[in-house]
Image (cartoon, rainbow, N blue to C red; front, side, top):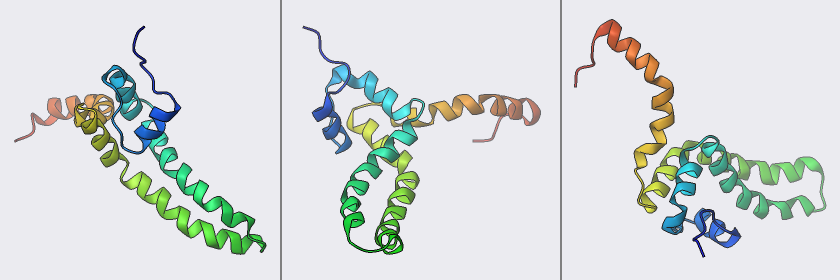
Length: 128
Protein backbone atom coordinates (compact mmCIF):
# COMPACT_ATOMS: atom_id res chain seq x y z
CA UNK A 1 0.00 0.00 0.00
CA UNK A 2 1.46 3.38 -0.99
CA UNK A 3 1.65 6.33 1.37
CA UNK A 4 -0.87 9.16 1.11
CA UNK A 5 0.24 12.28 -0.70
CA UNK A 6 -2.60 14.49 0.56
CA UNK A 7 -3.76 14.92 4.16
CA UNK A 8 -7.04 13.55 5.45
CA UNK A 9 -9.35 15.75 7.54
CA UNK A 10 -7.61 15.09 10.87
CA UNK A 11 -4.16 15.64 9.39
CA UNK A 12 -5.36 18.87 7.75
CA UNK A 13 -6.70 20.15 11.08
CA UNK A 14 -3.39 19.28 12.73
CA UNK A 15 -1.52 20.98 9.88
CA UNK A 16 -3.60 24.12 10.40
CA UNK A 17 -2.59 23.96 14.09
CA UNK A 18 1.14 23.89 13.26
CA UNK A 19 1.67 20.11 13.15
CA UNK A 20 4.11 18.52 10.74
CA UNK A 21 2.75 16.26 8.00
CA UNK A 22 4.54 13.06 6.94
CA UNK A 23 7.34 13.34 4.37
CA UNK A 24 5.14 11.70 1.73
CA UNK A 25 3.04 14.90 1.72
CA UNK A 26 5.88 17.41 1.27
CA UNK A 27 4.90 18.14 -2.33
CA UNK A 28 1.38 18.93 -1.17
CA UNK A 29 2.77 21.20 1.60
CA UNK A 30 5.09 22.97 -0.86
CA UNK A 31 2.22 23.64 -3.25
CA UNK A 32 -0.12 24.64 -0.43
CA UNK A 33 2.30 27.24 0.94
CA UNK A 34 3.88 28.54 -2.26
CA UNK A 35 1.46 27.74 -5.08
CA UNK A 36 -1.28 29.88 -6.55
CA UNK A 37 -3.82 30.96 -3.93
CA UNK A 38 -1.53 30.27 -0.95
CA UNK A 39 -2.18 33.67 0.63
CA UNK A 40 -5.93 33.23 0.30
CA UNK A 41 -5.83 29.70 1.79
CA UNK A 42 -3.87 30.82 4.84
CA UNK A 43 -6.22 33.76 5.43
CA UNK A 44 -9.26 31.47 5.24
CA UNK A 45 -7.65 29.06 7.71
CA UNK A 46 -7.21 31.92 10.16
CA UNK A 47 -10.73 33.26 9.65
CA UNK A 48 -12.63 29.98 9.99
CA UNK A 49 -11.96 29.55 13.75
CA UNK A 50 -12.62 33.26 14.35
CA UNK A 51 -15.96 33.10 12.57
CA UNK A 52 -16.92 29.91 14.41
CA UNK A 53 -16.24 31.63 17.72
CA UNK A 54 -18.22 34.73 16.70
CA UNK A 55 -21.31 32.95 15.32
CA UNK A 56 -23.03 32.64 18.73
CA UNK A 57 -23.02 36.44 19.04
CA UNK A 58 -25.39 36.60 16.06
CA UNK A 59 -28.00 34.67 18.07
CA UNK A 60 -28.16 37.29 20.83
CA UNK A 61 -31.68 38.77 20.71
CA UNK A 62 -30.90 42.31 19.64
CA UNK A 63 -30.81 44.42 16.50
CA UNK A 64 -28.38 44.02 13.58
CA UNK A 65 -26.26 47.03 14.49
CA UNK A 66 -25.56 45.69 17.98
CA UNK A 67 -24.67 42.23 16.64
CA UNK A 68 -22.36 43.78 14.06
CA UNK A 69 -20.74 46.01 16.69
CA UNK A 70 -20.06 42.93 18.84
CA UNK A 71 -18.42 40.89 16.07
CA UNK A 72 -16.91 43.10 13.38
CA UNK A 73 -14.40 44.86 15.71
CA UNK A 74 -13.11 41.40 16.64
CA UNK A 75 -13.07 40.09 13.08
CA UNK A 76 -11.24 43.06 11.52
CA UNK A 77 -7.97 42.42 13.43
CA UNK A 78 -8.11 38.76 12.41
CA UNK A 79 -8.31 39.80 8.78
CA UNK A 80 -5.62 42.45 9.17
CA UNK A 81 -3.13 40.26 11.01
CA UNK A 82 -3.75 37.20 8.85
CA UNK A 83 -2.78 39.30 5.85
CA UNK A 84 0.09 41.13 7.53
CA UNK A 85 1.69 37.97 8.96
CA UNK A 86 0.85 35.69 6.03
CA UNK A 87 4.35 35.42 4.58
CA UNK A 88 5.89 34.95 8.01
CA UNK A 89 3.49 32.11 8.84
CA UNK A 90 4.05 30.39 5.50
CA UNK A 91 7.85 30.62 5.91
CA UNK A 92 7.49 29.17 9.41
CA UNK A 93 5.42 26.26 8.12
CA UNK A 94 7.99 25.57 5.39
CA UNK A 95 10.69 25.42 8.10
CA UNK A 96 8.53 23.09 10.21
CA UNK A 97 8.40 20.70 7.25
CA UNK A 98 12.13 21.02 6.51
CA UNK A 99 11.61 22.96 3.26
CA UNK A 100 13.42 26.09 2.07
CA UNK A 101 11.58 29.17 3.42
CA UNK A 102 12.75 31.21 0.41
CA UNK A 103 10.30 29.26 -1.78
CA UNK A 104 7.71 31.85 -0.71
CA UNK A 105 9.38 34.51 -2.86
CA UNK A 106 9.98 32.20 -5.84
CA UNK A 107 6.78 33.15 -7.69
CA UNK A 108 7.37 36.88 -7.16
CA UNK A 109 10.99 36.55 -8.32
CA UNK A 110 9.79 34.75 -11.47
CA UNK A 111 7.24 37.53 -12.12
CA UNK A 112 9.86 40.24 -11.60
CA UNK A 113 12.68 38.52 -13.53
CA UNK A 114 12.06 40.65 -16.65
CA UNK A 115 12.19 43.86 -14.61
CA UNK A 116 15.47 42.86 -12.99
CA UNK A 117 16.98 41.78 -16.31
CA UNK A 118 15.90 45.08 -17.89
CA UNK A 119 17.41 47.03 -14.98
CA UNK A 120 20.73 45.19 -15.30
CA UNK A 121 20.82 45.80 -19.05
CA UNK A 122 20.11 49.47 -18.56
CA UNK A 123 22.14 50.34 -15.45
CA UNK A 124 24.46 47.36 -14.93
CA UNK A 125 24.48 44.91 -12.03
CA UNK A 126 23.58 46.15 -8.58
CA UNK A 127 26.45 46.69 -6.15
CA UNK A 128 26.59 44.21 -3.26
